[in-house]
Length: 164
Image (cartoon, rainbow, N blue to C red; front, side, top):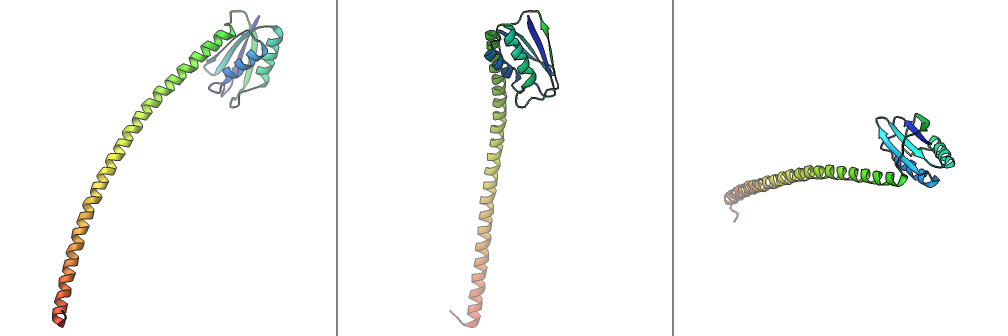
């Protein structure tokens, strides 16, 4: 006869709980195993040799993944069928691959936004560079006009003083 274990807490999902328990179930020789994230709890179904199940239950009650925050653990008998541990491995791998695909698609969308932001930044830099060139030309013209006036004034002063 199998067991149903319900793990409740403020942080029991997205902390690797199912993999954490699967690894130990495999190590202990639990033959049937499945775990599912449901709302605010993790439901674990397990079946196998009595000694392996007892050790597994003890492990579940005393160990936690690093970032898990558990408030309660309920254990009860379970009479329905439970998938073989190998089948659960495949299911979990497929689920993890799906998550990776979702994240990848999200990253591509984010990358497109980043590229658009870079395009706008480059446009702004080009505009600023053009304005700097124009300002430089304006300053150059202004400085040349002032130098010409100063030279003319110096020439007048020299003429009045009789200096060549």
